[in-house]
Amino acid sequence: MIHEIDASLRLLLAPAVTGDIAFEAPTRDWAARRNAPTLNAYLYDIREDVARRERGPVAERDAQGVVTRRRQPPRWFRLSYLVTAWTARPEDEHRLLSGALALLLPHEVLSGDAVPESVRAITPTLPLTVAVPPGDSRSLAEIWSALGGELKPSLDVVITTPFPVTPVYGAAPPVTEGAEVVVRGLDGVPNDSSPRMLRRPGSGIAARGGRA
Image (tube, rainbow, N blue to C red):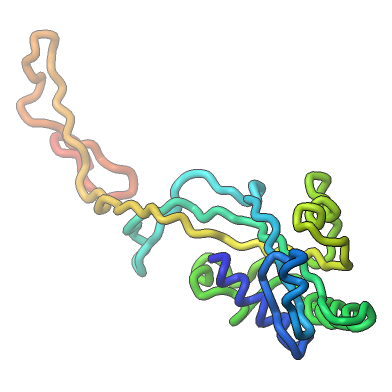
């Protein structure tokens, strides 16, 4: 799933740069090896969007509306990318970032071919935010410190995507008959020789030994 979101982001950013789009960690060693204008989209954080979490299984129905199986609901995750520009001059880096921002801002959601095929059955769009201030638990300065590099201008791009949960459970066939109940006395002898069939509401099944 994550690699598919990488591909969607690459597709969006491609028109902004004539050089490369990279997803490696922008460390000092990586920066020293680059030899062309580059946009780097480093995935630095993966967190579940707990506000979207659903409880209980989801029923899947056939064309007649009959439940055929049940599955666990998908879990949604926020993938946070640190988008930076790398060239020989700061002015060119700013132009690259400006081009990336111009391409990303019109998209409040990813839609169409930008949505990975594996999640289109779950949702036709994926939320996307650009340059929204990070939460208190994140610090870009700490990220750059961990990477061993100097602080650079960057865009914080967050794409929220569902991650399908594998377990799928088969469903039993629909009930077509009512339950039979035999009433016995204290001595264990049935009070009636014939069992009574309970009527399931709306089923049209008559109760045996009683009125329909």
